[in-house]
Image 1 (cartoon, rainbow, N blue to C red):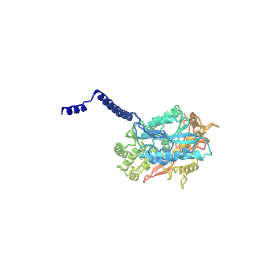
Image 2 (cartoon, one colour):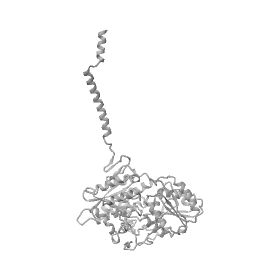
Image 3 (tube, rainbow, N blue to C red):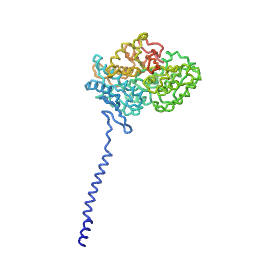
Image 4 (cartoon, rainbow, N blue to C red):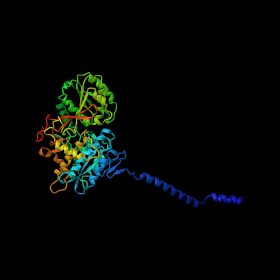
Amino acid sequence: MPDRLALRLRRHVRTPRQKLVASLATAAVVLGLGGYGISRLTTPEDRSCAAGVARPADSSECIGVNGDGHAFGMPDLGEIAGAIGRENATLKPGEYATVAVLLPLTSTDGGMREKVLHELQGAYAYQYRANHESNSETPKIRLVLANTGKGNAHWRETVDRLVAMTGAPDRLRAVSGVATSSTEVRESVAALTAAGIAVVGTTITADDIANGPGHNRYPGLARVSPTNTDEAKALSHFGRVDAAKAFLVQDTRTGDHYTDTLKAAFTANLAGAPHEPGLFTSPADPTEEGTTANTFRQITHLICDTRAETVFFAGRHTQLRQFINALGSRGCTDRAFTVLTGDEGSYLGADGRLDRKALRAKLTVRYASLAHPDAWNPAPGRKIPATGGSVGAYSTFLTDIARAAKKPVALADGQAIVAYDAMATAVHAIRQATPEGAVYPAKEDVGTQWPQVKGSLRVEGASGWICLDNYGNPYNKAVPIVELTQDGTQRFVQTAWPEGRPPTESCLPPKRG
């Protein structure tokens, strides 16, 4: 028994050498597991989406620039992104200049998503014309999509990428899109133009995202849409509004350049109005519902207390829709009212939350559109202006836009038309700036073309003539006045003009200042 006990004890008591070997083995295992864990922690997560596109550390959105057919995770953009990618694939290295369309491609707002889709369709339609239907003019045009994310929150990453694309092989020569009058867009335009890149705004209308006498904040910026001031002037000429019977409703939130300049323009045109404006404050993100519907219910009571017949509305489309819904159930439904507003009204036709019954309560809603398919489309009883645009240019657009999708592209909101014209303006400047014998222009020379885009060198836009002044702003651009019908569709009323009448055949802006 003692011998057996001794043997068992010897089996359980390890020698110093055995202990050392066991410790080393344990350490190796621990270090191996630790190294595995550390490698997992230190190996960067692959956040790429496609070439030139990745998800920022604080976002699930695909941000960046791509022209290979990537749709940035947005199924409704798949068809048009694919068409652009296929067109780009036909181009040979060294024969093209690049134009980017800068937009919040991954916006979750329904109205903005419609806008983005239509703008891409319009841009592609002109890219195809530039490459196939322009008598083999050079350079050919490569189109890329640049996503700034929801609310343009990631504009800086995308703009930095665009600035890096001005050399070979991309040779970025212009940026289009930049379609909302927000602080982020203003900063984007400032950064791009500071880098010597020409910018062509599509639907930016704010007066302070523009150049003018005494200030050239954005050298190289051009726009194809009239300013808010021009929209307000056109509405005033169209409506012949009696200021004594007008009432202004305006957003108090500052920093939104569309709203700020629109209410300034309306205020200037309503100097004789007898009442102070009705005020509301939209959320920081004006696409959110917030609590403004409650405020509008109260404002409608105040409007009923006045002698007003016309209500000017300075605000974004979500609040505009809430206001119209509130007016539909106002206390004084026996009285007729007309609501006049800026181009944000173009979103209403696709807004499922608009109360169509409100439009049958003696309420007329009209807005200054940036473009409309009936403005230059002949019809019985409709007189087409002799100058300021043409039936031929619009007919060409219809041919081109038919290539942009398998189904007919929606045109009533004007977005595809304006984007097509912006692309036409960018291509015009790129080719005008290309020296004889060269394949493409110097980066800085494209933006210097804007003062020459006038007279016989104007762009024959589908939305009307694009005659730029020396600061890159359209002169006396056609402003279609559109009415929201009782079933929610958009009906063209007539074309109005900031100067009160169409431009002369020469389309030369007068001296300013």
